[in-house]
Length: 257
Ligand SMILES: Nc1ncnc2c1ncn2[C@@H]1O[C@H](COP(=O)(O)OP(=O)(O)OP(=O)(O)O)[C@@H](O)[C@H]1O
Image 1 (cartoon, rainbow, N blue to C red):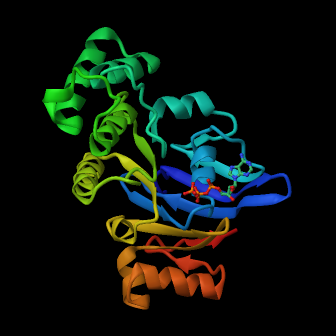
Image 2 (image 1 turned 180 degrees about the vertical axis):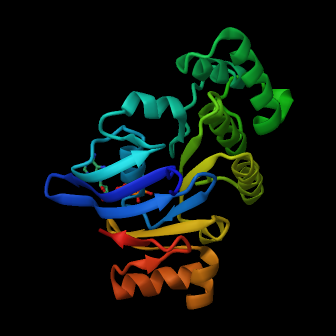
């Protein structure tokens, strides 16, 4: 018997009026994977994440996150996942430490554990102790990004959703961010990350390529590079060819349901 997938999605669809933002998408993410969801602006990445986090109800299809149903088990899912949105949701008037304290209390961490988590995340993820006691407003984007990541990790989630976490961040900070992601995945965390940076896509264990709400393919970056020359070329030729399921190393067919 195969272990429960971290994420299992079948025919997931979201319509806004007559417009279909996510169109019958199916895929699986295994525990401990760094799974990248790549596609241009407006292709349906955030809408998919929002359905998986229980923030938006699907119009059709099914999704299970950590074995739980996104329609029924919203609270249980939220307690076990971390979510970092495109706009880092930080409190500008609070210091980094206070932001982390706040998220810790939202997740109901007991005082001692909260203090321990805040201290640890400040040291290991955020860094730069000179500004820990300054308000977040005015701090550099790379720093704010690491703080937003730390906030999403405060309750030690099993699965982390990152929605374009590195948009607008300088290359050095982006690299540092990905080092954190890899360290977390090695410690057993599953990561679902959206990006439109092709160099970042190549760092993921597997990729889902999404365009106009349709999942074009799910494959390891190395396989896309072997077959198409680069992830970018793969994307272009798959868009030209239209949706077609691609075999994954696990043997499952994924793509449009
Ligand atoms: N609440 C909404 N009402 C109407 N249309 C929406 C809503 N949310 C998203 N959309 C539309 O659905 C499509 C997919 O949006 P989504 O935000 O999922 O794309 P994305 O791939 O995450 O792109 P971006 O990187 O720009 O956020 C877009 O055309 C968007 O305008």
